[in-house]
Amino acid sequence: MNKKPEMILDEISEEEKSGLHPSFFQCLPTLIFPFLIFILLPFGTRLFIVVIFFFYLEICFWVFVRFYLSTIHYVAWPDRVEKRTGIFQRDSKSIPWDQITEISCKQTLFQRLFKIGDIFIETAGGREFQICWAGVKHHEQVANCLFAMKKGAG
Image 1 (cartoon, rainbow, N blue to C red):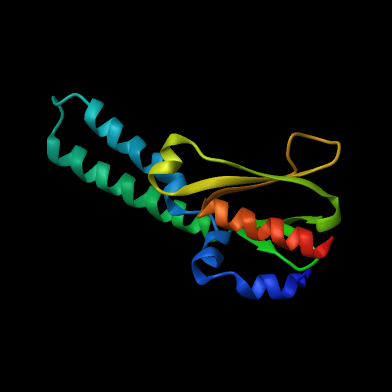
Image 2: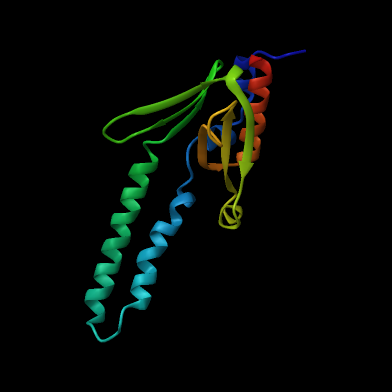
């Protein structure tokens, strides 16, 4: 018995629905970079000024990353898959279910630590992948839901 895509979408747990957005841990290296600069600075300078600068830089990076991630949305509609991005200009890229040929997952060692991964959605011809959902929490469960939705839409 084939389920309708709307029914499959309703069966996605809250944990998997939260996975349709990039994880904060995906951008963690951005926050580690100022810490490395802090460690490598010579200690001949005034330590108080360096510490203040370090915390200011970390807060700026943290705010920027949070703001940037809030503008990225991964949406699985009953008839298509979509990635929406943009801060000042909104961009959207959609692929209908019938054009999707492959859905694959990739997880680096860093991503394994935080249980996140990337989902690549490919179409026939063209480039290696058409849409990449980067830093998705519980990416394997989300990919399984996408497979089920594709099967239900096909």
